[in-house]
Amino acid sequence: MKWIQLKLWMLTFLILISCLWTETGKAAGVEPFHWGLTLDELNQAFSKEVSSDFLIREDNARLGIEFPYAPAKTLKITQGRLRALVLVKKTAGPESLGQLFGFLYDGRLFGRVELLKETPWTSLQEVTRGLKKKFPEGKIFRSFGRSKDISYFEYRGDTVYVFTNELGAYYFEPLTLNKVLWEEQRVIDGKESKIQEETREQMRMH
Image (cartoon, rainbow, N blue to C red; front, side):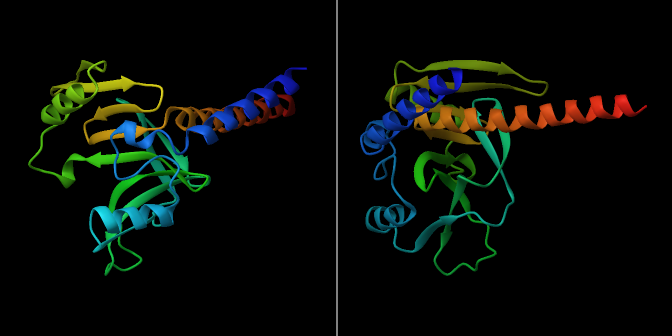
């Protein structure tokens, strides 16, 4: 019975995601891009609206993805259905790392990244103020570290989740982000269960 309920929940979840693919990007403030674009569609939009000298491509140079999913939280995820995107010059070789642009899930855009190091004339405080103006319902809070205090911004909307960390600003389509985190938690739980089973087997052998 629980398995049937889970399958029905997942079906509803996927239907909701498919309905939101083409509706949320402009509201999210990630124009000229919107959630659900494929890599080819992203490149067409970038070439037309931003620059024809650059290319967006999947990051195949790294085996794993450092995936920020909240202001002070990241996961190390193996590339699979989740893919990182980088922006490179069209003349760059295949070994070029490029700058982080965003994330695809099942080949569709659901995350956009704006790193501070790519705009060194902009500070995190300025980015935070700008996001607060754009998303007035968002919250600014401070994290007290060993060396310095940092202010973060976070806004949770129906169509976009926005936050900052020390590196920059991140925009995510919430339903897909939750799905990625749910699947990753299953992987973590599976690994922990395997370790526990191996530990119990070793104890039985001694």
